[in-house]
Length: 196
Image (cartoon, rainbow, N blue to C red; front, side):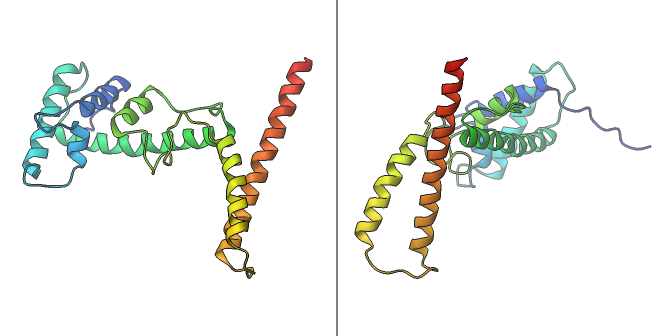
């Protein structure tokens, strides 16, 4: 007889797992997620991580009204949640960056927020260096003008078409043009709304 598959995790179970992984563990001064991701040291060994997952299993099963889960299943589920929800969050942030507003069918749910609050929203791999609340469109436009002036002053030499400086200058020029067109577009939209 084939082994029966465990039921899928419910939304409540996923959020409970995220909450447990965000809690500080023992006397390590870091969350369970950070401890799980931390490299092995004299204090953090494989047995410590195994013990931590046993602790997660106990806490999860005592707080869950659903199926009793094994620590290994919780570990796999957490790995899956971090990778899938990070991708959803990155797509959501990309749309915000490109359009200035969330997409119509935004998949950034309460689960995505719960997981991202544990693994961290601010990181080069997700957002770049700046905080997510900062709209950098105008800053980019003003900084590009300053950069263009500095580039022309600092680089008065003749460049070839394959020069990396010229390629970067062209990219900056195109980004600047894109921002100028976006500003015109939004101004036109505002004007139309004002007429209505």
